[in-house]
Image 1 (spheres, one colour):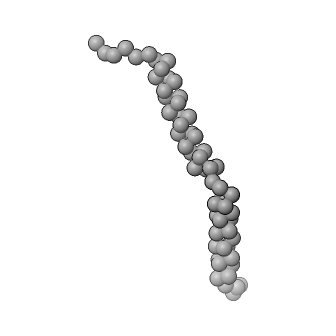
Image 2: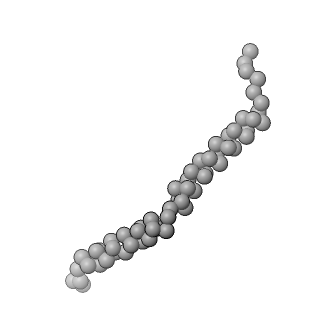
Image 3: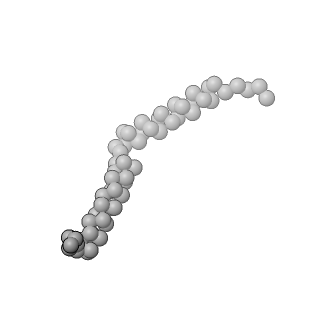
Length: 59
């Protein structure tokens, strides 16, 4: 015979695992310091300036 399994415990364990994965994704998405966010914004601005500086105006 097989093992006796409490389905409620399995369901709760599955829910805990799903919450853990969601929490991990949120930490990656929102868990950055103000300095890290500022660095990303400045890097995007620098890249935009670099592209605009290399633009050719021969219409």
